[in-house]
Length: 190
Length: 108
Image (cartoon, rainbow over all chains, first blue to last red; front, side, top):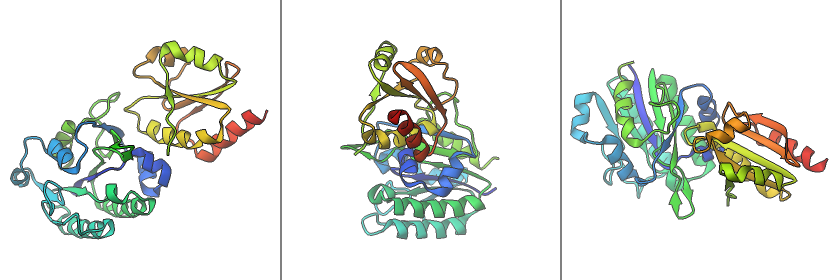
């Protein structure tokens, strides 16, 4: 089973409207989708801590999860382990893509893309779009999500994206960060 | 800078429509992914139509308003002219289509 969960910090549906990324817009219309709602954990670290819940990084391997570039510290946790202050979005995408290819099929890859919320450009999103398309083509099951949206005034948008091979937990509700880990664990079972 | 749209409750919708020559209501729900995409598209065209009033109805908070206007799919945009519905758009539509529909109404 080739499975991956990829979190893209700071990506909102508004970016899909503004930048028209071809792959993500097509994916939105062709797979189970939803909306992440999260007002309280709007930094990469606090968002991931909430997604991981009680699971420590050391426990992930026991669950066949492979952490990649998780921003619980700087440099990030897992492989690649990047210094977010010294990396560009392009550099980050190249590094996580290499690791993705290396680890594909060995467990569920749990990956974070952290620098889009700093970049924020349509050029940046179109680059992400290209890398996600490549990853998607190699996967049997996936979850692409963002724990919060883009910059809005002094804060961040409370809505993030959710596109997956798995249906959202409740049809007429937004998805909360605490609901993601059971879904991530399920990715490897389908 | 995106223009925020007025969020309308059940009590406000009728007055909003009747007091506008042309009004556009965006029916949406927080869990509806395409609703967020369409919202952004609508936000982007608001400055081009100062004579049109734009509002939003959260159908999760106001299901009776959705029933009242027979909204069965999300997102739905309903265009009102002089208080009467004259067009209904269901789903995400390209910005250009939305622009052309509104321009034809405004120009009439």
